[in-house]
Length: 322
Image (cartoon, rainbow, N blue to C red):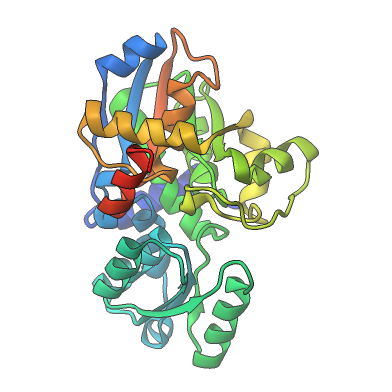
């Protein structure tokens, strides 16, 4: 594992860095979900994390590593929403100026929250413009430090703390299902899981329309796709990262997909039976479990519920089938 971008020791250090500022989110159970699947499901609820998603973990860990000069110059990031909010909140707590490149069609709640945390927002068209190029130009022009949403060792280590907590609280697992966009959460969680529950199988879950990770794992090289049309806005990535992909190759057994319709049903289940609001991307692992996309009967299964940032009107529209 020494050739990979992060080690379990990096995750342990990240956990110490964020310990006093990040929430140790609950691991919830659902007897209904267990009965439906024949498994024991452990929901790691990062929808209850600060700013509503796991992204705060990596963002704080990354910015906390800045030198005094970097803190003065500020941070720039690009994101459809949750990384934006994580960077904005972490930057505010650490008194670092933040600029975030966000698409015009980012969820309203995520735009408003990012502004509310004090970040400057630069908007772009996700279908015609390159967010990475825009962010890099801003970093060069203003002398800021760019923190990508997933392809960064500090981000990956921070995200891995979620699985570390899950296994510490739930005990050894047979299977871990983790949502997949660019791979920061999956790669970090894979490293933590391999260290703490070595026999646990690790599987990533993508939206069916954006299965670049699945294609990449099966072909042996990073596959680039057009921006996928899916309600899972946090997984509308076009490719895995140069740092995240080798970790996924080494430690992840498979990557499966779920449909938008399955995501909507999972959102409705989480709200009606578990009394919690989960955004579409946050339901990827739940949908995979409830629909038995992977056989889980008789297993102890960890589910990473990645976030809960969705406009209430949009949530109602989706679950009511409008």
